[in-house]
Structures are given as structure tokens and as C-alpha cells.
Length: 109
Image (tube, rainbow, N blue to C red; front, side):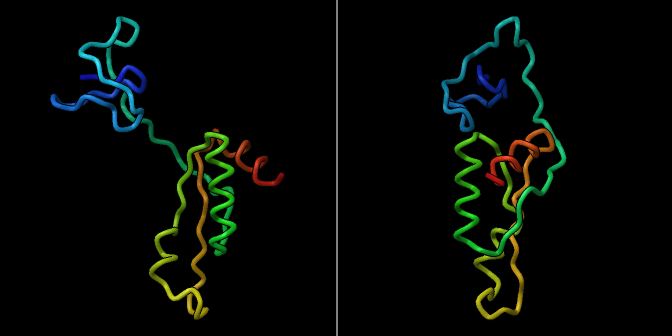
């Protein structure tokens, strides 16, 4: 079974692409004969903060623009004693290199 949108191949029994939320098809069209392999690219840090409120705003802006991001260090916010000042738990917002300029422009506005 294949996703007609992202062209990933799934094992039998899966009816919907978990990523794209579309129904899978048995065969791809001639234009899409082989499923694509996932792309790997380097990430670029476009923003960094320890402020959880500001982090939520930045993530919302990027979500609204359809820019995919990774919040590096976000899980440390709940583990480290940030309020004690013992650690500086900065979260870095990272995007794909080709989205970096757009993300920076949005976040400066």
C-alpha cells in the first residue's frame, strides 16, 4: 500500500497514511512508480530562548506558515530545575536549511 501524497510504502493492513491523513492506494500511478526515500537535511538554528511563553509564540508562527521545525532541548524544560537557575535550558528552534531565511524573516516581524 502506498500514500498517493508522500509516496511512502506501508505494510498491509494500514489503510491511511499517518503523516498525510489520506487513504492509501494499492499501486502508484506511472508518474509515481517508486516511493521516495525520506529526505535528510541539515538543520539550522533560527531562534533560541529559555522563555516557554515566547517559545509557544514562535512555534505558532512557524506552524501558521507551514514551516516544519525541531525544538532542540524542549524536553529539558520539564526535567531540569530551570527556576532554580542551576541550568540555562535554552530551546533552539531548528529548520531545514532551505526554510531558514523565511523562518528568520517571519520571526523578526
